[in-house]
Image 1 (cartoon, rainbow, N blue to C red):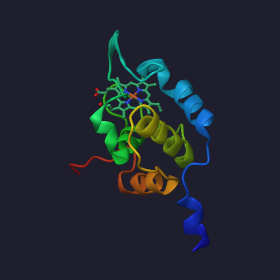
Image 2: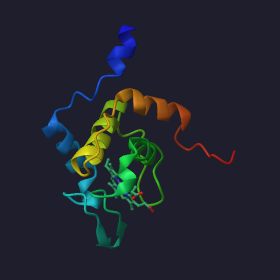
Image 3: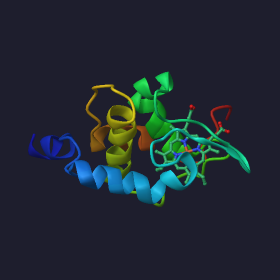
Image 4: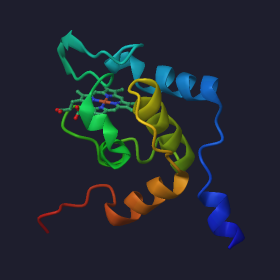
Length: 119
Ligand code: HEC
């Protein structure tokens, strides 16, 4: 079961790494503290947002995009998506699930990018 253990460990990126990934990839739209913005569009707050309780919701948005948010499926690997999801889930909110690369891999498989649930 070694392989399973390897992919099921929490993201190895440290706290600073998680924040940097968020700052680099998300803060441009969602702002540094995740409080979102109104202006040339609407960027929802990711901080204190009860929808962020579900790590699976965050991962699905990142894999598939959602209207104004681009899909990150080809820009980030599973570990990177897990890291940024952990940051949004735990640091911007106070939820305590552990996000693993296996969680991301599972959703990538179940909901491949561009899949249309109505098909
Ligand atoms: C180019 C701008 C842009 C970037 C970069 C961006 N987002 Fe978004 N994001 C949006 C917009 C716009 C929405 C709202 C989509 C909608 O509901 O129409 C959104 C929605 C979301 C939602 C759903 C919010 C909710 O309340 O349902 C999550 C989660 C999210 N983004 C996470 C992230 C994360 C994590 C990153 C960095 C990896 C990121 N976004 C980067 C523009 C962006």
